[in-house]
Image 1 (cartoon, rainbow, N blue to C red):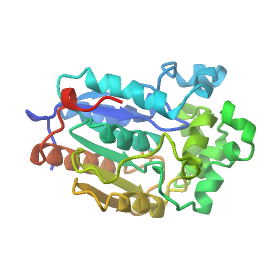
Image 2 (image 1 turned 135 degrees about the vertical axis):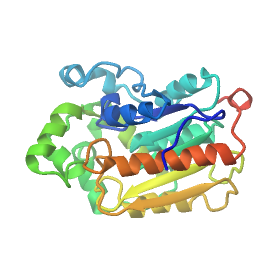
Image 3 (image 1 turned 60 degrees about the horizontal axis):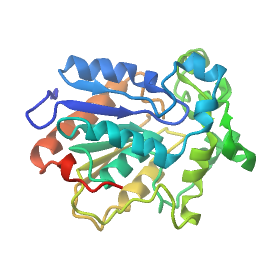
Image 4 (image 1 turned 180 degrees about the vertical axis):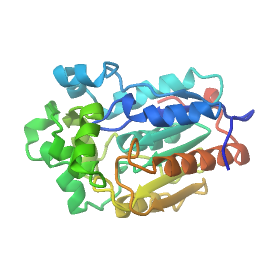
Length: 283
């Protein structure tokens, strides 16, 4: 069933992930806009330039921090006339959970989300995907290049080499080393920026989606993330798409995941009391 805007929700905020820019949402933006939604896909702060420019000068990427990025999106969401649906991919899915924890949004969807603090699963494929960053502590202060080979393993593992290389050319940018280290070592930091109050019952409904062939965030990680919310009475759902990779922005069949996310979010936004942004606690 195709979702459409309602009196409660007419806006979708899309948050891109690590190694990506808002360009990665171009197909989703067009699909959701065609259904009548206002679709916003803002860049992380300082990453408003195009892919080609960020590859040439990745300095803005190296400056990224988890809290700065989440604060940036909080400001965007608070400026809207009513709570939007918030969807994030990969690290954007982590940011979505942090935003809902701040009392924002009518519903949230973490699409193959990076893990919040408390997830202990660390599969080999996750380590392999982030090895270009994790191999040196000095990378914490750098923007780390994402090669075509890196992309093929992490995002393009369901694509031919030619299609993977074309997708890498169009979408991939270096990664923010500091931000990656913040998430990777969150369980060792009592004040980790990725900590979420998984017990709170007054947040918006949350859906976590996983891909069965995802090398970056395998289903075991997303499922463990979802399990952390079990003490809460707030709506939390988990769904796995078998055979899907991390490249939700352009892998053939992406429409199925996009429609599932939207249908679920619209239904939840209309059946669960919406969060009132103006009354949400500021942090």
